[in-house]
Length: 336
View 1 (cartoon, one colour):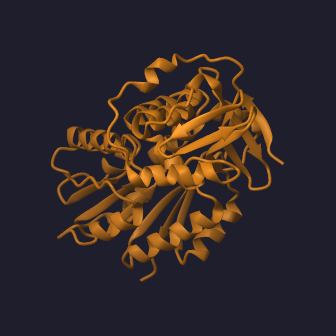
View 2 (cartoon, one colour):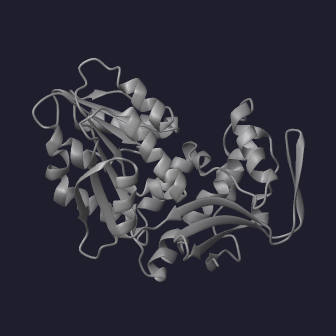
């Protein structure tokens, strides 16, 4: 059974700032995904749609919060062990592929150890704003690096990058516990898909957030500043802007729960009253207290990570953790 670990009782963030954007023509795939999630119990919204321009900025704010340990701890691991992580790429042209790149600031800890010439950096993200920021950051800090942003799903991006002339062996990064946003079966399927898209000898570096005491998780996913709440609610604001929905943002509260069985943290938006929400061609009726699932963040144990690599057909090269064993980065190789 999931345990409630955080709930908003009163709004703390100015929600007016969440809606500033002209409304473009509704995207058919976006609308289909949203309606599919809202039509089946439990209601849900795909977490990949968090990252419009404002959502990306809010997430970067989250990564700098005192209680959000994930970014800080993984950065320390990259600082301490970066030389070993990039060692397989030394000696010639190479490509670093950054899946879910965000603003690229963590990746720079590794890119600086390779540096131009011969280095290609390929940030991959669905958010154009995030891609632009990551590309600009690397171009400014590492002049001479070939930067190839790719706005696409992960596996299709790898297939496109495989056709780049002179790009050399690849190190694919999947950092920040992004893999935790997938249920275990989906995460394993993605690893297998990435393995098929890579060439023998290519490497994959994946970050896993480890199981830890609940108070630490509570602070990370339900911060007292209310930024995680604003990030969650921005998803509804995006539906209003881009799909013409009429979600009443103050009538929802952010809720974080802990499921010890998976184990995982989950984010929800809970309706504070009975209401009808309208989207193109559809009305969604929500009862008071009804929840919409928006995100999962699975937590792992070392044995689970080992099994993941083996089941995906990847050979483990090394793994690195912080002194408190809060986080784990694992380097796998595609067998030759």
